[in-house]
Image 1 (cartoon, rainbow, N blue to C red):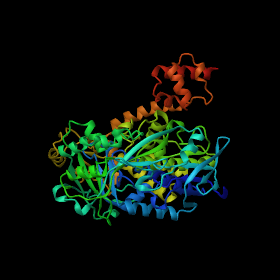
Image 2 (cartoon, rainbow, N blue to C red; image 1 turned 90 degrees about the horizontal axis):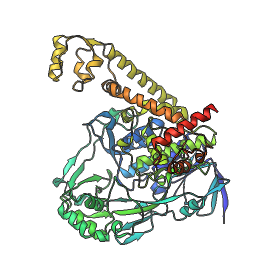
Image 3 (cartoon, rainbow, N blue to C red; image 1 turned 90 degrees about the vertical axis):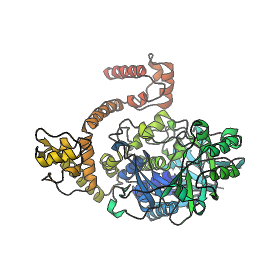
Image 4 (cartoon, one colour; image 1 turned 180 degrees about the horizontal axis):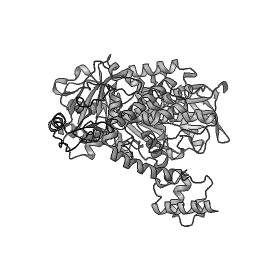
Length: 626
C-alpha cells in the first residue's frame, strides 16, 4: 500500500560522499531537500581507505572547496596526519593527502548536515523513482511512502544490488555488512537505464596492539600543515599527528597467495564485475607483477580513539584463514590479529555515457546521478560529482542554465567529461595524467579558477568572496612588483647567486627574471629586496609559480584557446548524422548514441577520427551559409 508523505524540491538517494555534497548544495541553494540513506550510521562513511586526497584526488578536494563544497572543511576538522605528495616534482602534480579519523569524519559531516537549513536526513530505502512522461515526479520507499519531488539525485554508491565476497563466503550486503539495496536495479532497468556490474575491494583491519611497529619504517606527517579548505589557515591547523608504518610483502607471502588463487572469487569466476585497474587486489598484484619480489604495505591508524589499523595495499577477497596466513608472513605482522576481514564487493552502476555534462540523464528529465553509480571509484571523485549534481538539480528546477566545467577549468571537468564522453569499462579513478592542462589546474590555484563560479551559483558567501578578491589582487600586485623591482651587480647580489650555484649577473635585472631560475627562491633576496612587504605564504607561492612557469603557462593557455574554439562549435540537437554521407559508419553510430553537444566533445569520442571531425566542421559551415 502506498501513501503520500510529503512534497519536496529534491530527493537525494544515498548519504555517502556524493549524497552529502549533493544534499548540502541543494539545501544551501534554498531547496527543500531530503537525503535518504540505508543507515544513518553510514553518513559520509569511509568503508575503505581512511584518507582523503592523494595524487590528483587532492586537486578534486581543493576544487570542491573552491566551489563551496564541504569535503575539504570536514577533513581539516578530522585529520590525524597530513602530507603533501610529489614535492620532488613540479607544482602541477603536488597533491595533498590526509589520514582521517574515520569516526570523527562521519560525525563532523553529520553535524553539518543536521545543522543545515532546508535539509532532512531519513533512514529509509528508496525502491522506486517515479517518472511520468520521461520526467521525475517523486520517489517511493520500501514502506510505501511516496515523496513527490521536482528532481532526484541518485548517489547510491556501492549499495545497489551489492554482495560481499570473502573466499567461498558470499553475503548479500553493502559495505561494512550494511544492508544492500535490492529493488532499485529493476526500477532503473524498467526506466530504460543501462546497468553494469563493477567490483571493488578492501583489505583487512587489524589490532594495532598486535603490530610490531619496531620492525617497520615510520611515516610521519608534514611539519607545516597545508589545509584542504581555502578558508582555513596553516597556523590554526597544527596538532599532534599519528604516524603510519611501511613494511613489505615477500616471496613467502606471494607463495601463499599463488597456492590459494583457486579460492579467490576473482579467479574462480564467482565475481562477475570488473575491478579497478589502478587499485588492484593483492592477488592481482602478485599475478600481474610476478617479477616483483615485494610490494609496499602501509599500516594506517583508523582514528585517535581506536586500536584498529588499516592494511593499505592488501585488498583481498581470499578466504579468512588465507588472509591471516599471508598477513602473518609479513615483517612486523607475525603475530597480528584481524579485527575485520578483507572482502570484495560487487554492485550495479550505470553506463555514464547516458548522462549530460550536468550529470542529468539524457532521456529522463530532472534525474541526476553522482558518484560510484556513474562508474567512478573513490570518495573524492564521488564528492565532486555530488556537488555538481546537487547544484545542477537546483538550477534545473529554477529553469537556469547548468554549471558545467570543461577540461580546461578543473579536474572535476576532466572527471565528468571522461565519464560522459569516453565512458568507462572499469571503476574510474582520477589521475593527473588524465588532465591535458594540468599546469593550469594546480591544487594551489583551485580558488583562482573556481571560487567566482561558486559565488555566482550562490554557494560562496559575500565575506569569503571579498577575501578571495583581496587575495587575487595581492597576487597580481606582487607579480607586478617583482617585475618592476631591479637588482644590480653588487657584491651582495653576486654572493647570493654564488651561494646558490647560479650564474652571476653582468647587468641589472628584474627580480622576476631572477626568480625564474629553478635554483633561486623568494627568500634568497630578502636582504636586497627593498620594496618587499610581509605577505602570507599562499600569496608568495602563487606569485612564484606564475613567474617560474610563465613560459609553460602561456603555452598551455594558447592550447586552451584552441580547445575552447572547438568547445564553442555547438552541434545542433536535431542533427541527423545519417544525412552526412562522408562520415564513417562507426562515427555515425557513436555520434547518434552519445549525442555530443560540441565539436570538441565529439573529437574525444572513441571511434570518431580527426577525418570525421573535419567532415563535421564542413557540414556546420554549410549549415551556417544556408
